[in-house]
Amino acid sequence: MALVSLQDVSKIYALHVGKETQIVQALKSVSFEVAESEVAMLIGPSGCGKTTALRILMGLETASSGVASVGGNVINGCGYDRGLVFQHAELLPWLSALQNVMFGLELKGVRGSELKDTAMHYLELVNLKDAADRRPYQLSGGMKQRVGIARALAIDPKVLLMDEPFGALDAQTRESLQSELLDIQQRTKKTIVFVTHDLDEAVLLADRIILMRDGVVEETVQVRLPGDRRNMEAVRTSHEFVETRHYVWKALRAYGGTQH
Image (cartoon, rainbow, N blue to C red; front, side):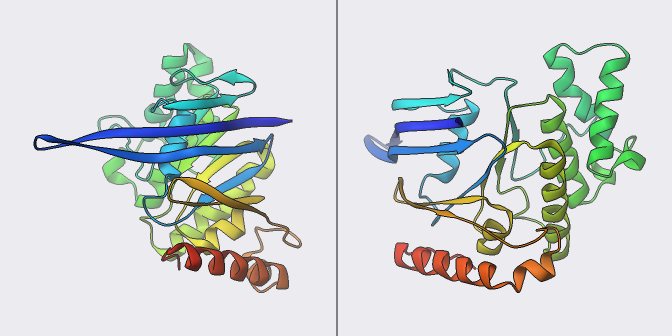
């Protein structure tokens, strides 16, 4: 049974340029489903509607038509059944790493010893226990993103939504966080919907890749890789990885994408 569902979702924006109004259709009758504990990657050329679809799932945008739902419940604004990890960590600079993770829990109504204990648990989950008292300016880019992931996971959402969270990081840090995300997903069994421009990242992390172009879903690709995906060297050199990557690369080239 699907946990996440978009059914015939369209999104139309009215852009006011001077005295003129331009109509832009970001999504055109988009439909896809994501099963419980599945990792689904949205990939496609810039401007194809990936982030718009993610924002509708989070409740930050309202669909012009169609239905978006999580767990059978129609999405009507933000909710604690969904957690979002942004492109940049967007941490509150005056709070420590621990306090940033506690922030979402406080909004959810968690109080007392449970508040700090829960926040610390998720900092430990992303290997930042020793950095709990540091402010954002004292954290590296990768550490900030770990705090962002911990903050999103701490409210125990049904679905973790991720909008290119590793795109601005250097290659070594990105691979480290990809491995950590795989480990976290295996331990928590969270359902993840992840937007990326990185083809290797899509194939490495996904159970299923949803290919988009011009506001529509062109096709979905099932990903079946051998062994433990956290062993990235073995996975990247496997026949299954190379074959899947090449297939998706050809599709994206046909769509006019510039994935690497």
